[in-house]
Amino acid sequence: MARATTVFKTGRQRQSIDRRPLAEQLAEVITTDGIAVGKPFPSTSATRFGVSRPTVAKALGNLEAAGF
Image (cartoon, rainbow, N blue to C red):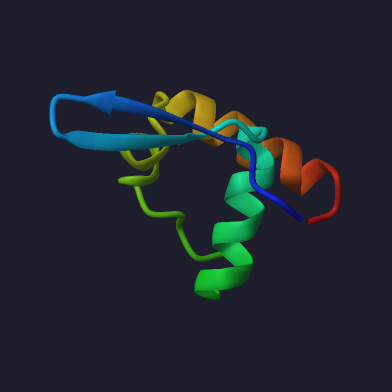
């Protein structure tokens, strides 16, 4: 699946922002990084995705409710 990204130029750096739903991004990280069932999700994920920890918790809850 193609990633929808937006690139912003800030000074000399380019920052790419992934516009996919957070739950979709988290599902990719879980499958790619091989995070085991029951293992705590890294707390740095909120910073990684530019959202708050409660937002990550809600997205993970939505994945769990969907049977992921």
